Length: 177
Image (cartoon, rainbow, N blue to C red; front, side, top):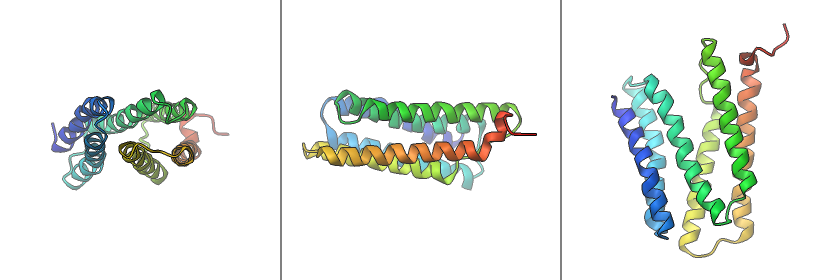
């Protein structure tokens, strides 16, 4: 197993730790765990590319770890009525749709790499969730502020999802011949 994959596994291991801390109302330690876990996404990617450690296992685990971390935070916020369930559903729908598109493409011998809009979506989502966690520590999140963060997450999610499909529509075999 590569160093990059081990770092990705650390991110996965941080998810239950993060959730336990959140439910224990230990918001600053939870935020620190979330930030460290988020940073491992950039670190494992750098190591994989820089040291030629790109592997099929890493290609599978890295995006899964990202999705699980973000969804864990969103599910907690939905339960606490700080993040609307409809927004979570949009995020989940995009993730399932893009994953499905990638599976069909791989079946046709094509790999769909992450686009810049997907990276922006991930970064803005993680940053927005970090801000919401920080606001929890202050015991105050203005409704409009949480709504702005929600809309940034939703818009970047939709834009990146649309980009994946526009750029790779032919992978579904639906393009005109």
